[in-house]
Structure formats: structure tokens, C-alpha cells
Image (cartoon, rainbow, N blue to C red; front, side):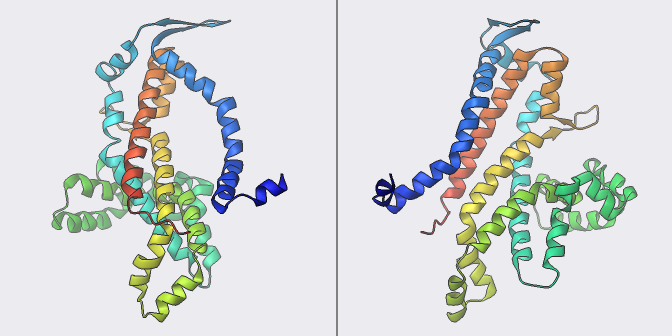
Amino acid sequence: MKQLYYKMTLRQKQGLWGFIFLLPWIIGFLLFFVRPLVDTIVFSFSEVNVGLAEVETSFIGLANYIFAFTVDPMFNQFIITLAFPAMATVAIVVLFSLFAAILINGKFRGRSIIRTIFFIPIIMGADIATATLVGGDVASELAVADTGGFGGFSGVSDFFVMVLAMTGLPADLVGVVQQSISGIFAVLAQSGVPILIFLAGLQSISPSLYEVAKIEGSTAYETFWKVTLPMVSPMIVLNTVYTIVDLFARHSITPATGGAIGFLERINTIGFGQGNFGLASAMVMVYILACILVITVVTWLISRKVFYYE
């Protein structure tokens, strides 16, 4: 066995170790995910009756999917709001994570304290971190940011909105940026894992590349665009995929009746609250397909500019 390993090429060895590292996930996927996925697909095309001893299904075709798109008052809103606002949030989280990682990767006094501050929202939760760091009153006011106000930061909010509006940016984009500023602690909470991934990528860059850039007279700005960004570009793809999946799981809407409703909360209400497991399964399948489609398109677009160093 050892002799066979030594006869492998470098690419074959990399493929083998990649498979070994993925093996726990593959086993978990086969044991715990495949059957629920198949059942969900079957339920989505069926009327499901859950009894004490068994689950009865009767095939009804696309009825659940048609009901989800044409009758349910919220499902279309969930799908539509995933298009522009969600992708803008993904871009904000990834860009913030990259620059935060570059900032805390530098060598300066108090670096450990700064890193701890960045990860407080992850450890404590966004709501608790907001109340702790900016005070309970301000945190309560920040909760009404969806209505267009920033509460305690209304002056800062108005200033930024005015500046962005004067640049001629679309009103929808200005609204997304405004909402992101108001939810800075939520952005921090979503950026925790991407920051760690970017940190790992930054620390894996060979110092010799920076030494060569310095010898060639490259400025810090040029070094970032010619060395740092290309070397961490694979991490951008990874973090984009992670952020999209995470955002899909967190995604919520605010209906006209008021109060944010999360997609998972809505599914639980339809499935376990109303007992309509067929409709809930159809919604889940559409959501999964939408997630796969978005990830495929975004990954393809970003991968065209990715630099892989060997």
C-alpha cells in the first residue's frame, strides 16, 4: 500500500487526501441526508397524511407547487426578495470579511483584542452584542431600521443616504446600504466564518511574494491588487457560496401586517402547525433549487477571475 502511494503523482496524492478529508461529510450525507431528501421530493408531489403508525401519501402531481406560487400569500415574496437584496447583502458581507481579515491580520499591538471584538457578535449573538456595546436604548431603536430610521444614528443615517443619493446610485441600492449600516452587528455575525477563511488564506501567502513586490517598488495599493487579491480569490468563491447558503437559511420578509417572518419559520408553520407537509415540502424543494441556481451562476461568474496558484 505504501509503495502504491509513493508511485502516485502529486495531483493524484492531492486528490486522495481531498477525498479522505471529504469522507466524513460523504458518510454523513449518505446516512442522514439522502433519505430525507428523497422523502421531501416524494412528499412535494403528494398529499401527505401522517398517522400514528405510518405516513400515507397520494400522488397529486404539481398541485403543491401551483398552490405555493399562485395561492400562498408569502412564498412569491420570499423568492423575489432573494434576487437583488440578498445578493447585495452577500457582496457586503464578503467585502467586509475580506477587509476585516486584512485589518486584523496586520502586525500591531492589541491585535488579539481587535480580533476578539470582531467575534463578539458571533459568540454572544447579534442582538445581545448590539445591546451590550451600544446600549439597550440604541439597540431598541436600531430594531426599527426597516421602517427607514436609524434611531440613535438618524443623523449619520441621513448623511450617508444623502451622499449616496447625490452620487446617482439607484434608490434600491441606497436602501440596501442603509439597511446594512443599521444592521452592522448582524453583518459582523454573518462575517465570522468568512473572516476566519480569509485569515487562513492571507496567512498562507508566501512572504517572498511581498518581498518581490517591495523590491520592484510596488506600492501598498498595487500590492493588494497584484498579490493579495489574486492569492485569496479562491477564498472569495468559497466565502460567497457559504454566505449565500447562510443567507438563504436566515432569509426573512416583513409582510404588510408587520413583524419579520423567516422562511424556516414559515415552513414549520405550514408543515407542523397546519399539517400540510406536501406544501411545505414543495416550498423547500423550490428553495433548494433556487439556492443551487444562484450558487451556480454566481460561482461561474466569480470563477472566471479566480487565480489558482500551484
